[in-house]
Image (cartoon, rainbow, N blue to C red; front, side, top):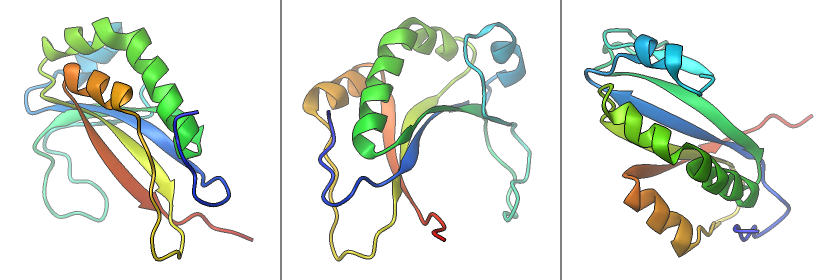
Length: 139
């Protein structure tokens, strides 16, 4: 397992995001292997925003789970879709990234580990990395 979870396993989701200012997202998704969880288009104004999007793109949920499971699934995703990541750039994709969702805790400090092999693979393929903290309802 990749991740070092400091307390009980924290839940979240890893999301793959591809976007570009001249990306033909509709054309690309018609022939791509990806099943988009969401699609956004240049000029759309996202909910709770006042500025139009400068790009078009889509998101794919890679997996849900703790950060270790997310990293393992993301590495498998890269292995399966390396050729697709290269192809999408010809459709106008400028930016690709993984967004790791991490459940917010009230600890003073919390850390998560991603191995160098994974980070190097992402860099080689031109992927960015984002961490998003989320507060999940408990009840």
